[in-house]
Length: 192
Ligand code: ADP
Image: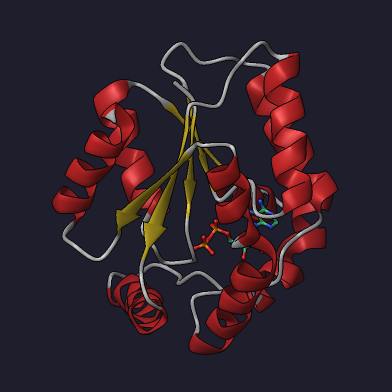
């Protein structure tokens, strides 16, 4: 089974993806993690996208589509979880093409719904927790970058909700509950 986790920054896509990995042996493909890894290892691409990411803007479709293509080549017997990808209609179209090319199908798109105030509070807390634990906070986990990240989400990513609804693939889950409650709702949505 291949699924997309869709939702605004801070909705809990990464947390839920991790749970699906542990429970179902799926492979998580997080373009955000891939881009941060490229930044940390100081690759040319990583250096190129660092500023864009810190501001909360989207990197180019070409870059993230390339990253996903590389990973799809490896295959996954448990299926893929797309986390933070696609984020634009062009990326959604490209993903459709790539899945076809690799003989795969998309089974469901799970939208995690959380309202803006909660998203900002979660992200600002995540930064505080990181600092308290002696880790570096994500450069884009600031109230200021969050304003841009949310705007990017509503302008460029939220149209995907209609896109996948029209394809009959959209499942909507309330992302406000505990991690466990959201996990159970996603499991139900995937069965339905
Ligand atoms: P979040 O969902 O919490 O915003 P991510 O880790 O998914 O965090 O993404 C962090 C940043 O990485 C984004 O703000 C953007 O700059 C970049 N990024 C990640 N995925 C994509 C994508 N599919 N298209 C464009 N930019 C992306």
